[in-house]
Image 1 (spheres, rainbow, N blue to C red):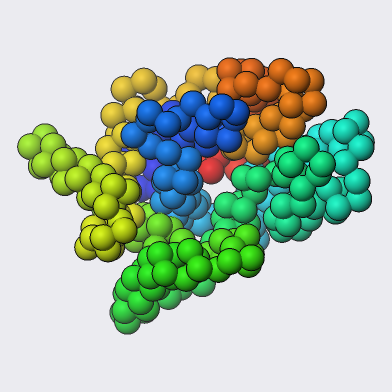
Image 2 (cartoon, rainbow, N blue to C red):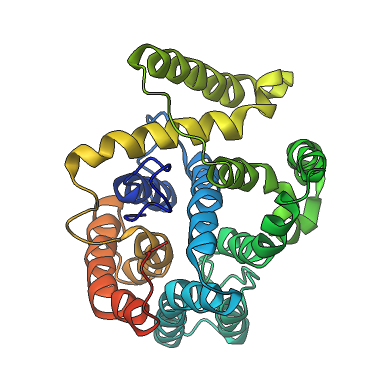
Length: 324
C-alpha cells in the first residue's frame, strides 16, 4: 500500500516483504526445496500473507467509495493472472498429454476451486491455489466484517472466531483424513490470521515511536513466533498470540522498508511469483531442467512481464489507486 488511508495511519511499504514471502513459497515447492535452513518456511509464509491481506484489503475496502468499486478492484487485481495461469496450464497439459482430469482441475481454478487432480508425473495443476480460495472467501466476508465492527458487541464474536479458528486448525484439520484438501480451503481454519490484520487496520494501530518500545515488542513477537512453530505440539499459550505477533513484525518490516522507497522499483511481483511458479515448475519438469534456481529466475521474469503488461493495465482500467 502506497497511500495511507489517513494521516493517522503509519505509511508502510510491504512490497519487498510480500515478494520475499512469495519467493519462500516458490523455493519451498521447487525440487529440491531451498528453504530448509530459513527461519520462515512455506506454510508460515502463507500465514503471513493472510495477516497482510487482512490489513491491506481492509484499507482497500475503507478507501473504496462503494461495494461495487471494492469488487471491481478485487476482480481486476486477482483475476487476470488466474486466467493467464489457466491458459498456461492448459497448454502444458496438451503438451504433456495429461488427460481429462487435469484439464478439469485447471478449469476449476477459474471458479476458485482447487481440486488438485494429478497427472501421470504426479504434478498438481496448481498446488498452491488453495490459499487463494481462502483469500476469496475473506474478500467476500470483509464487507460484512466491517459492518460488524461498528457494533459494540462485535469484538465478542471476533474473539470467538479468533480462538475458534486456531482450535479448528490445530485439532480438526489435522484429522480431516481424505477430506483434508477440501477442509484446508475453508477460511474458518485461518480466520484468526485475517482478523489480526483487520483489527490492526480498522482501529489504526501503529507502531510506538519509542525505539526502546519497538525493540522490546519486536523481541516479544519473535519469541511468540518461534515458540509457536518450535513447540506447538505442547499446546503453548503462544498459539493464541501468534497472528498479532506476526502482524507486529510485518508492520515493523513495512515501516523500515520505507527506507528503500515507498514501493519496489521493479513493480509488485509477489502475486505473479505466487501464481506462476507452480505451472513453471511443471514446464521445467517436462524439459528435464527443473531446479530451484531455474524456477525462481523464470518465475521472476514472467512475473515482471505479467505486472507491467497485464496486471498494472487491468488496475488502470478500474482506476484503482491501491495495488493490493
